[in-house]
Image (cartoon, rainbow, N blue to C red; front, side, top):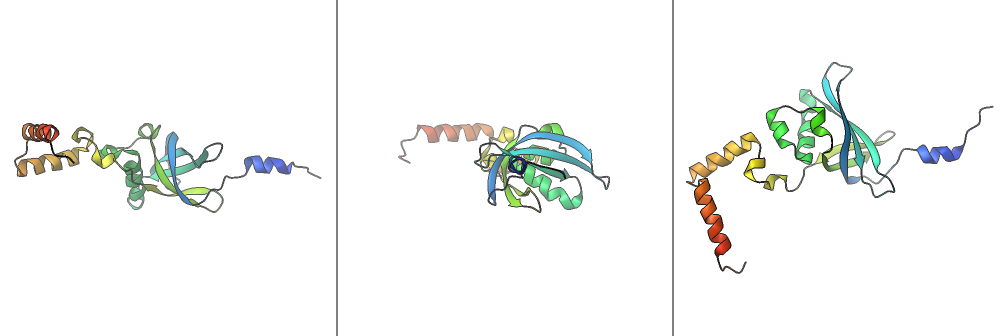
Amino acid sequence: MPRFNKDEYEERAPMQVAEGDYPFSVVGAMDRTSKAGNEMINLEMQFDVGAEKPMTCYESLVFTAKALFKIKQFCDAVGLSEKWESEELEADDCIGVEGKARLAKGEKYMEVQWFCEAKGFSEQPASRLSPADQKKLEKARTAVGVGAEVEANVAGTMEDSDIPF
């Protein structure tokens, strides 16, 4: 009769947490081809779920028209909007990035339900904007007659003012 140690199950059982938004880091990424022949990037992510050790989850970014929404969500969540705009995302671009994602209970494991949009990335300086957004910003500045020199003067004037707010 086969024997087993039931305590080993507790050590290896899939970690379950409450559904919610958790911070993650991408610790591994590989370019792969799906069974259907589509290009994809497999992500290995570690989530800080408030446990003694991080929880590992896996997600695939599949480069098909139906799955582009997830690639957009991922890029927005981790600050890689410029990669979305350039239409070029490689596995190496993903390693080490951090963001937040909604985890939900899957059939066996916790799964990424969606990637949460990062707060603050939209408030980056113009040099960090995507090329398309830089063009929009420049077009808007030109339309209202605000060039870099005028903008700098306005910023300096605002900083030197005595307005108490």
